[in-house]
Image (cartoon, rainbow, N blue to C red; front, side):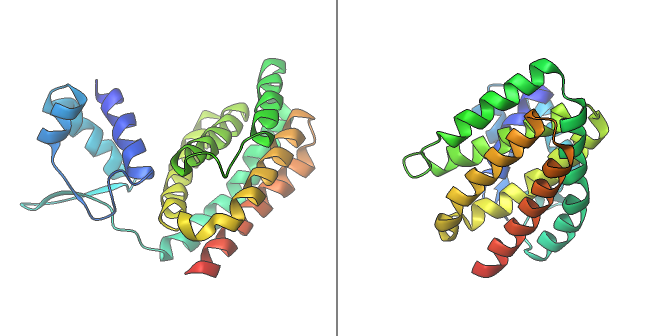
Length: 208
């Protein structure tokens, strides 16, 4: 139950169904999720470790406020680890994983960005990144990157309406990256992942 609460609340926080700075009532959430307060409180403790919520004595728990300065800190880490994950995925992915990645590349290329709800586009983006992390076959690397990708996705969602012209570029970048991994081109996969991280940071800074 705590895991269910964690994943449900994590998605709400990442995709801004719970806005930055918004107070979080564990009792209301427990009712919404159809469970007791204990698993919700356990989930909130995990989310605090993920820097998605913050608790203050006698004040309560809140969705973490958005600090754009965090983008530089997170990008500094991702620019090192995202290429590593892409390289390891290209080197280590199983045959079944490569087939899944190739299929995902095709589905991504066919994605109608303009005709798809923007929250669903962000869910798709999360799915692509998680598929790559999983294919790297390093659970510790996967855990770290999921945490930082969550923070970056939250920033992305805040500026989503201002980034309409970049969405198609992001989709194209994902297709190229997934294809390089499926084809075991480790060097190209690492280069594309690095440029993807740097390009995202440039795009955000351009609209701030």
